[in-house]
Length: 538
Image 1 (cartoon, rainbow, N blue to C red):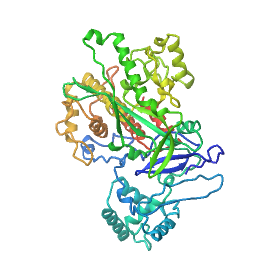
Image 2: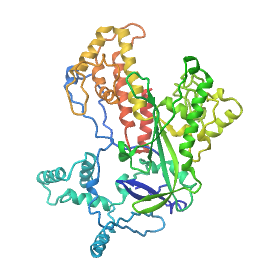
Image 3: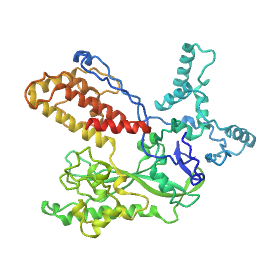
Image 4: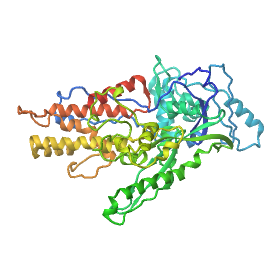
C-alpha cells in the first residue's frame, strides 16, 4: 500500500463509492493515472511452425480486464450496524465506513455485530485465499460454485490445513471487513509507484488542495458521441452521459452506472450551401458550448453541493476530470480544426503536421496546449495560427481542468476501430499490390480455418466480404492475424519489396503494445515498457 506521511495530506480523505456504499481512504501524495491486469508474452519467433500447426493452436485470451460481477450477495445482514473507527499515529491514514442501521429493534444483537465489525482485517490471510476471492468476484460466481471450488481444492491439495475459507460466505464477510485500500491496491515495492484508480492521479491531488477543509472531491466524467438512429443515417441524436470517477473502475464500466445527462441540440442547414458556410459552423460550435454551460455551470457553485449517501450528508465539490470521446467529438470540445491537414491537427499539443509522425522529437520541441496560450491566440485574433476556431471555449472559465489534456479517446475508438482497422486495410492493399489477389484469397482461406474457441469470434466465410466490423470482431482478428500473415508469401528480390517477416513483426509488435495498453494497474516499470513498445511499433 502506498504510504504518504506528508503533513499537508494527513487530514485529506477521499470519498470512494463501491457497491452503492461510500467508502473513504486517505489520499497518497505519490500519484498518477491509469489501469491494471497481467500481460501474456507472445512468442518471439514464428518461423518454427507451419500455418497448419498455427491453425491448430487455440488462442486463449488473457483474463477479463473488466470484471463482470455484482456484489449483492456480499451485502449480508442489512439490519446490522457496521462501524469502524481506528486511531493511528500522525504518519498513518484514517479510513472510515459510513454507518448502516435499518433495524434497531434488537440492540444487543447490534452491539455484538458492531463489536465484531470494528476488528479491521488488514489483508487476506494468504495469496491462495486472495486468488480464490478474486476468481469468485471477477467471474461473478455464486456461493454454490465457490464452495465447489473450495471442496475440490481441499481434496487435491493434500495440505494438513486448508488455505481457503470454510465457505464463500465466510470469504465475502471477510472482504466486507477489510479496508478498501487493501482490496484495490497492490503493495508498493522497491519504491515503484503504483498507478490504478482515478483517486491516485496527479489531477486529483492538485484539485483536492484547492477545496475547503472538510469537503470531498466529486470527480465528473463525461461521455459524448453523436449517433445515427436509423440505418439510412438521416436521423441523429447527440447524447451526453455522466458518471463519477469516485466509483471503482469495474463498476463504472457497467451500463447502469452511466446516466444520460441530456441530448445536445443538433442544428441542421436548410441546404448544402449553408451547411458549408463558416457562419453556420460557428453557430453550431457556439450552441454546443452554450449548451454545456447551461448543463454544467450549476455544478460549480462556490459553496459546493450536499450529497446524501446512506443517510449521511457529505459536502462535495464536483469537478470535471475527463471527457471521453472520439477524435471529431474531442475537436468540438476543444474547438480545434477537425481537418488532419491543418497546420496543428493535434488537440493535445502544438506540433505541426510535418512533425506529427516524428517520434524523435524531444519534450522541449513539444508545446502542450493550455488555456493560457490558447486564450492569448484567441484574444489577438491569431487562432488560425494554432488551428483553433474563432469561438470562445466554455471550459476556459471552468476551474481545475485543462480541456486540452482532459479530452481523451477511449480504447475502442482509438485502437480497435481506428489504428488496427487502418493496419489491417494497409496490409491487404500492400499484399495485393506486391503479390496479387491470389495471396489475398489465401489470407481469407486461412481465416476460415481458424477453429472455434471460447470468446473468439470465428469467421467461417472469411473476412474480406465484411464491411462494418464491430470492435469485438476486430479484437478477435488481432488474436489470429499474426498466424494468418506468417509465411503467407515468398520473398522477392525486387527493389522496395516488403518481406513477409516484416509484416509478421508488425502484428507481433502491435499485440505486445495492445496487451500492455489494456492493463488497469501500472507500476513505473510498466509505463516505461509501454512507451518502449509504442516506440518500437512506430
